[in-house]
Image 1 (tube, rainbow, N blue to C red):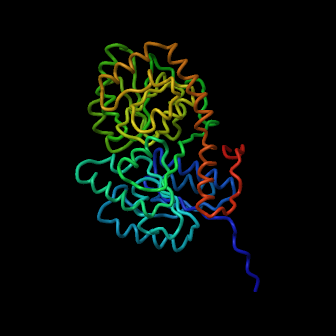
Image 2: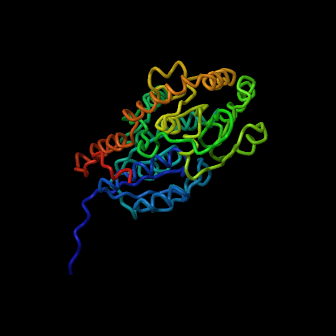
Image 3: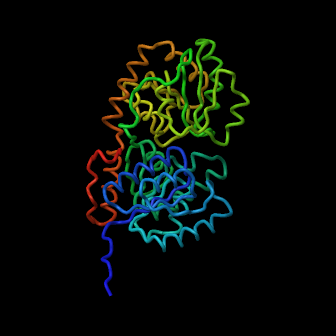
Length: 379
């Protein structure tokens, strides 16, 4: 009886919860690059648009039911994942964000080469006893991560200072620079438009931007603000938003909003390295971000004086937003320099190549199909 030869290509399992926002885009970009390079790729997640998009790329998709935050269902989530791992039998596990990192490391316990990518540390997202518990877990669970991938040097430094002892690698976030390009604004609205792209939640700080907005309007009366995205804070934000603020929701294509923006603002309380500022700069738009982990590293060095504000300071944020809106020449210069910076530093193909190098090391030098910068990565 003839038996087909086993497929020699390594299988990578990307495990993720959440399934939206920047984490999902990173997973999809890596899956696309790895499929193009000839690897076998499986994505395990709780469904959503991420599952559909990964399937469209050609990845195998396995449902893994898990809540976004740890809770009483964690034991069952780990058991379901253990059964899934027995079926998929990956040569390497790449777990994204805190929840998947927790469940993945508990299920595997180092038996398979494991990459953990925090996408911002879990203990920064909570406070009090919960933060202490999250920090204790990250310190303990680090023993089961063969590689912790941070998206910025600042994120790595935060982990080191917190006592998370692990083999670290810094791989800056990358974006599709052939998709995110300058273009004409599709919107014909009066007055300058400020755009904030991100999940409507405490981390992203839209409430701080709304606190700053009355002062922006005092100095720039015809300014408008678009909070693009959805999330748990949507209704609370709507209740405090004036008429000059719109809520487009979770749009299928954010590119037109970047192109329409006179300024893109992300007032985050914490990050690893946010994608929205990189995407906006790739579109030639000026950005204003809070000085949290990864923010300085995502900007050209000369941008710090104009594009960084301290987190949690609505008054300072208002002054910076209004100042940029009133200086179109500076905005144009920042946009041009920002695009050049992203093209040279944050192309997603660089990210894919760096991750491929880590995979090769973890697989003992096992040859992977080359991650060359091919046109097909963007097809």
